[in-house]
Length: 338
Image (cartoon, rainbow, N blue to C red; front, side):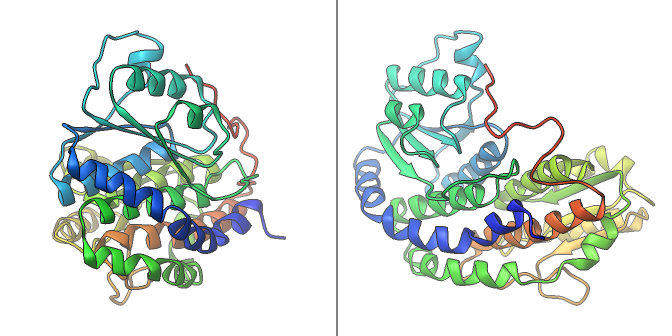
């Protein structure tokens, strides 16, 4: 019997296909506005998987547009009432539900201090959508599983589309319509070697660089949430500055290969961690022994395909370990933090 997590992640390609068409006009208008009056900086607001999507936004905006981007802690406004001004900035708020009190407080404060607030939200009728200047529906549809999957993927595709139009990147714009088909291929990939490696694991590092750090973060999050594996995400550079001391026999590492300049760092980390005796598994790259992922139509879209393939493996791994990924013991679908 298929879980909700399985069914919902499998729907991601269709959701992305519809989303790219639906949001095109709004994003074209927003992109014209941002080019005419470039923001001084971009701030992102999100919790959990949404904050991992914000990591993707950060690297994509900074590398493609050269605009400083930072993740803002909602508690600055909801708890500490900090007099922080976001005038002349773009504030990207990412949320599946659009109802968490701390995100709403931060979004409202950002709007009141002069930011352009763009809400990337799955519920266009949510309180967050009412606060935002511009609403970009994720278009993932209902998610019954506690583990968010298709809403995370649609967050990434919306961010990619926004940056492609804003930066006038013709190659990315051409590649985006090919993303749904590539996602369907990614869903069919066989990651059983990774599933076998992690079946009895208690601890794990997930590793990526640049855009792929967001996927490492999301993978670690899902392994904790659905499989009860203590997983930590690191940059392939940062993991070698101390955390690597933990890696070795019985402490596996899952690395996400890049299709850009960050790949050399990921491969070097894999080599050094394997030399310490850690079981190492690499996603992407197309080489023998690596976890298969379709070649991305554009390097910036490669992380989206990797996490789609990962989701199918994580759903099966949860079952192997005797857990229901739809119903973790302590996780609620809408988390009301302040």
